[in-house]
Image 1: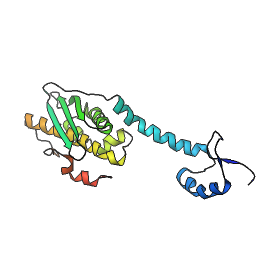
Image 2: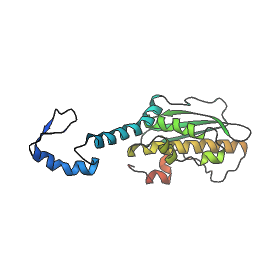
Image 3: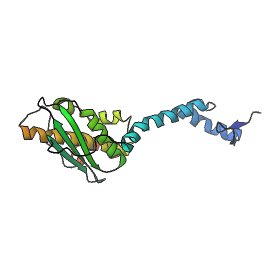
Length: 196
């Protein structure tokens, strides 16, 4: 081949033709056409875009704080990583969540999932909020790294614990609402998660 091959789009890193042929199958499998910077750049941009929501929630979390005299409050932790999440609910007379706040001691993913979970339940009834799963929290954040999936389970369980507290205070029975766990590793879901 008489054409010089460059590994980067700025044409500053020459690659020996034999080296290029050796790495070409890997790049084709991972990124498509290796001669096109657009395939690789497109995948990189997609990964960055997917991470933006999580980073935004961590950098600018919404609904941080406490609710004085909450309708319900739930606290859940994870002894393995040390994260602790507390959710506060303010319910109206129609049993709709008017406000939801959180306090979290933990990593950025724990803060991001707490923030997103509060956003997902505001305006929902008890039954609708009960349907908010860790999967829904992760999807709203455009995903989490496998080793941080447990943070989304903390958010789900803390919401459920706050709903349980509200139901107990008001003598409400709600289908599917179960007593809360103190530590998420007491749940079956915890052992089904990647990286655990």
